[in-house]
Image (cartoon, rainbow, N blue to C red; front, top):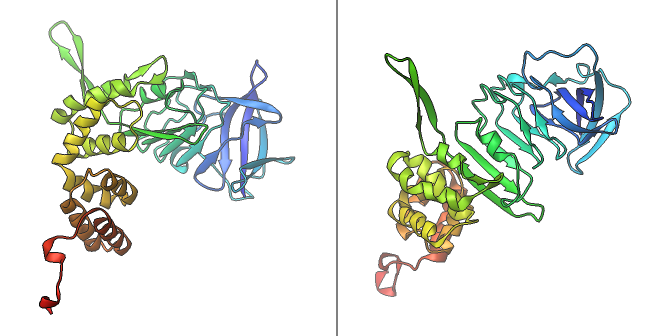
Length: 338
């Protein structure tokens, strides 16, 4: 059971504009309604450490039962310090879950949330203010409770995040699609003597963020960036793109699939070792099942797991080797060997 308190004000439309959140951990959760009114907005500077409250506002307390995902509104509020709560903002918030009712996020809502790593929200977010994620350098995960083929605010959010971002789409039927949007950088060069500035963008992450159509992610278009990415992006970025797309192939054409498999074939061992370091055994197993990894890749990965002291991983990899690859001549024994 988690105790939360929320500072809020009523909007002209009879909804709730959230002003601040207090909690006992660095994970903030927000209910769909407060005092019977839907939570539809995050105010400017809502989670910023230097945000200011208006003269008139209300405070409401809730208890959240995580096992049953139930909210219980409490009659008394204003006891956050007595319950060991802190204002969840700045470096004191790592994860945030917003309800499906949220449609608007105000300017600089997460300003200086340097520890924020992950945000989960619904698909109804339509209005996003300016500089919402300024200095959110740790924010690399976005979860949207909608299918990959549904309209969402993903593009608007990604437009304000230039670092690596992994977006997970969770459909109502349980289907999950993950898309990796790599980092990009941009800078302006002065063109003298006219004092005109030219915009320079580096990284395929910018083009990847344009792969939306009417607010819906267009993964067929996304796959077209890979050819150029191979010439410009780091090996780590390419590994993430390849593994994520092959594991979540929504919208993938046969041409795109062959391009990803060609890269996987050329770098199978290093990718398998990298997956082992990430402890992504399920991905390795899926690739083995499809015949996409060579025997050597699994062997070296098992050795890497052993060197790293991950005995369970080494055992699982050896099991995959036995399951998907025939024993070599050196591993076959006869009575003449004894």
